[in-house]
Image 1 (spheres, helix red, strand yellow):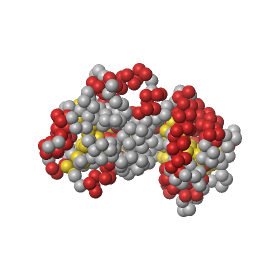
Image 2: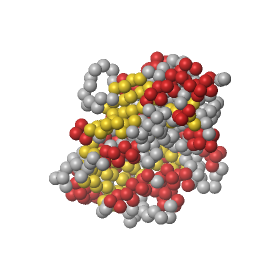
Image 3: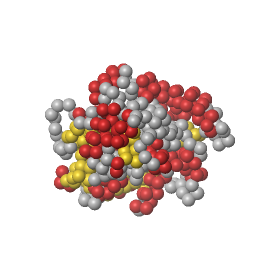
Image 4: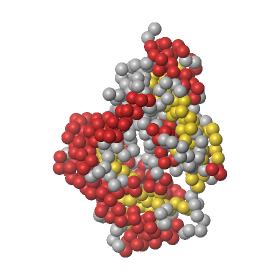
Length: 471
């Protein structure tokens, strides 16, 4: 009996799935760029099951791949093609353990779908601020493992900023549990932060305590057209001042990205009268029943027009129109797929340099990738831009993408590094970006990452081949 069969023989059979037709959904990454293999998918029912699994695997040196909603863009939740790893899906662990509205906190298991947890908060008139395009399928454990960002980072921060406590099964099967939802707990190292953004390489997150916020009483959403991309920082500053720092989202959409979407989906319409090279989708929200947010937004648009910072703009007149604006923003990745898919660059620079980065990177593509189509959009408020490149319509798309990754992507990553930015703003490292981390990561940080991995997982059984290798 081999090691994997020995592990499986020790586990309750009701948590073991061997049917390869079912397993196939767990072994292909979200973007369908990589397919791995596994003998079985393990679906624990509770934390004790996870501990049982990890102990059995640790004893026999069988690697594990933790998986939430399998929505990683970097194959962080996909097993290798060697077939020597077991997948641990947290999908059955989806219980809300505690909800404390007065404390503005919730405790839930790692397998709960993000939109379901948002609804739990909404049902008591509160808000879980983490919001992503994949929120109908991603799970909170995976969100924390990748330190997810999303559309509300400007106001509420990244996923790690919402975490009050964690429960994690460590590589030897022991349990780290510090779920108390305290805002202040300055008792030594903030250990929980080690596991946020670690992509399952240090342990398996099984539960979390999260901050909630009060649900907004007023929300204003505007779609703006601008001619000069250099105006982005000025528009953001004006919006924050005019609304009293109530801006929750400030999204950039290039004219080419919007046109790709309109070309792909006949049922969508342009939100403004005139086309532009650049657009901004901004949203402000307040819990105050007194502050007139709509009046502030109207004043903002007047100020922006007066100073020539926008050429057109409209404020959503209804919840339906707001939803239509956001549908445009969130459907851009789908439009890229319709046009043959893109080479994605998940870049972040300081907000004051974002426009300069977009212009410089665009010139690189225009110069060295003849006919390539740019799709550029992202979270301007936190400096995160998705700089994506689509092959020409009549090209050999596979060959063109290969050339882009070989010749263009290194230039874009180098430009980001020269501007003090990063190659991975919110997607993480996974399997795909380990070489970039080695090339552009701070040397001191890399030494610490390797040291922490070696200390917590000396045998390398937790999500091997992702983020870092023990050396």
